[in-house]
Length: 228
Picture 1 (cartoon, rainbow, N blue to C red):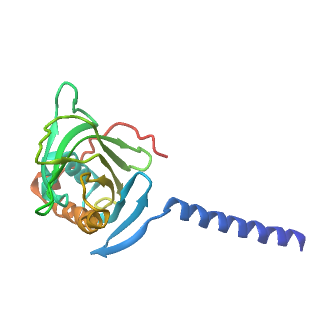
Picture 2 (cartoon, rainbow, N blue to C red; picture 1 turned 135 degrees about the vertical axis):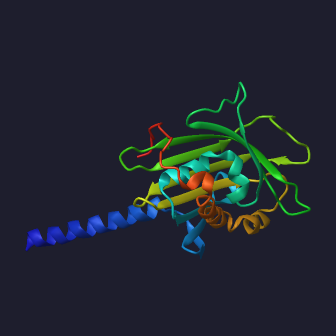
C-alpha cells in the first residue's frame, strides 16, 4: 500500500512538473486570432513598451522552398506585411555571405505617420538531427541609408523557425519584436501590428508557389545551430 501511495505521489509530481514546464515554455503568450490555420499571439516584454508578436502556421511546401524564400531579401516586400522596400547589403563593414545576411528594409506606415526603417544582420542555422532551420535577425546601429523622412527603429528582433512536417509541408513560426521609435503611442502600435505575423505567413504561403522557388529541393544552410 505504501509503495502504491508513493507511486501515486510520484505520478502527480511528474504531471505537475510537466504542466509547469509547458506553461513556462509558452509563458506570457496570448492568442489574439486565427486565420486559415495560422494562429497569432502577442505578449508583453520588459525590453519594450510594445508587444512581441508571434504566429504559427503550416506552409504547403518543402522546407528547402521556404528556406529559399526567406533567404531572398529582394522578395520581402511581396510577402512581409507592411514591408515597402528591402535590399541585401554587401559592404566592407557589413559583408553578406553564406549563412550571414545583412539587409535594409522599410516599413510602410499609414499617413500621416512617418515610415520606419531598419538595418539588420540575419544568421541562419540548422539542426541536422531534426532538420529544423532557424533564422535570427537583429537590427544594428548604423547610419547606412539614414533618411530624415524615415524613422530608424531603435529595436528590431526577428526569429523565424522552419520545421519540416513530412516531405512537402513546413511549419513556420514567425516571431518579431519591433519598437517603431518616435512618438507613436503603444495602443496605436498594437492596432497597426496586431495581424502582422498572421499576414506574413499568409504571404509566405503565396510566395512558395512562384516559379522562382517552387522547384527548389536543396537546403543551403550549413551552420549548425546552438539551440537545444
